[in-house]
Amino acid sequence: MRGMDEPASHRWHHGFLRLYLVVAAFWLMGFGYTAYDANRRISHDRSFSAAYPGVNTREIMEELDEQLPRRTFALYALPLFPVGAPILYLIAMWILAGFGPRKKTT
Image (cartoon, rainbow, N blue to C red):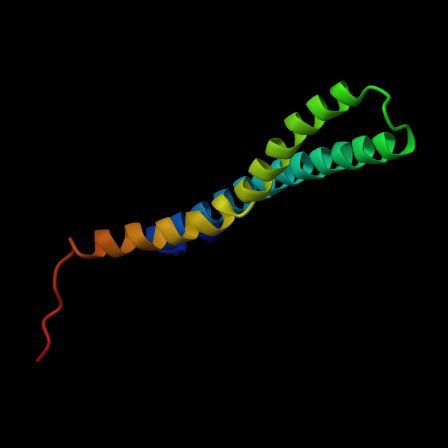
């Protein structure tokens, strides 16, 4: 088996990297689609209200009130996991390395 001659820590790093890539891909697809869909609805509502002024104005404004925060949240959430997870990983590894044995310098 290919992985048996590798150190255990190397296999763990590869496993965590693969897990990160899969979760990050789904994260980006989910929040990316949410931002795209909210933006599409906002654009449609604005073009409809411009084409037909005075028709269903209250309903269009309610729809805009729902979609604007949805788009904003999705845009803020997009970089949260792909950028935040590696930073948290590096911080955790730095903290855990502080508990390891000290190397003697001569």
